[in-house]
Image 1 (cartoon, rainbow, N blue to C red):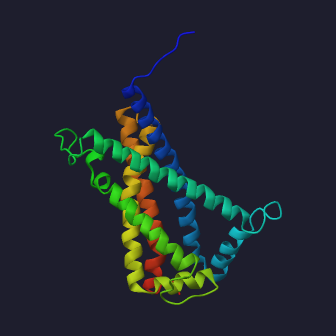
Image 2: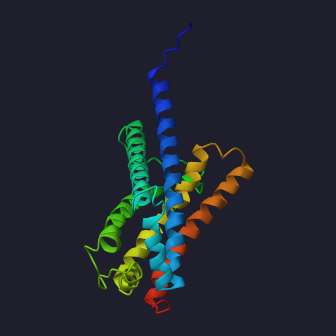
Image 3: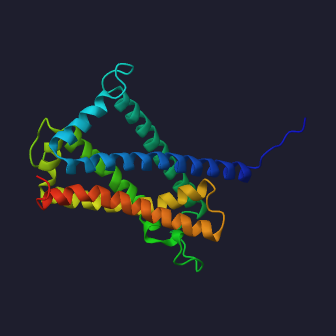
Length: 236
């Protein structure tokens, strides 16, 4: 039986492909969660009873097969694994790229000056990820654990949301975070689908760009509708 010995460069190439695939799959898992979370946030327009019932239902799904909040904990574990995998792959790829340039600053190529790889979202991807990570921690401290309660604490999920987004600076912070999410999704969606083999032609490339813009736009607008509606008194 013939044995194949991979060279160092071949092993590095395979490792890079694996890291990109890990980043793509974990990113798609997180996009799916964002869309589901956005849908839940939009329930605020249905009123307090509907929103609180939705929040309560999330804790009882699967009973009695699953314990109380059992499905929520499954989702949390999956999300945590996806976030750690995404961050790990991103750091390893950045480090590998940094070493490949010999520690030099990002080089400028004359080709594809306006392409997706040189877009504003691609240059802000790393800092956008850091902003999102910090915001997630604040978001949990605010709406989930109620350690930080601008606007006032409440046992009602609906009241917590309305109280919080009645504070202007919280809406500003939320907007900055959602814009970072939008830029991240614009480039990340395109990159993930490309990594998974969807970028096969010029037509496919245009289609991927459209999908990336739609995903980023829908998620950003969908998340910003509730806070601005509450801040301007459309939801009370």
